[in-house]
Length: 66
Image (tube, rainbow, N blue to C red; front, side, top):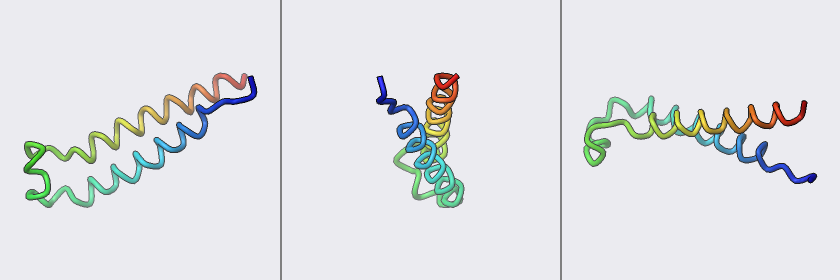
């Protein structure tokens, strides 16, 4: 099987997760922005989750090439 989509999926999640996490840190001081999410900076949490998932996918790519 020559088709391995773990690498592009992992890279996509890492890049978007990094952008979302950085955006969450830059907007952390804006309290009005997070009133709908019960004053939780959801951008940081979702971005961190995407970074973790993307990192796991990239680890699977590295592990499968051995």
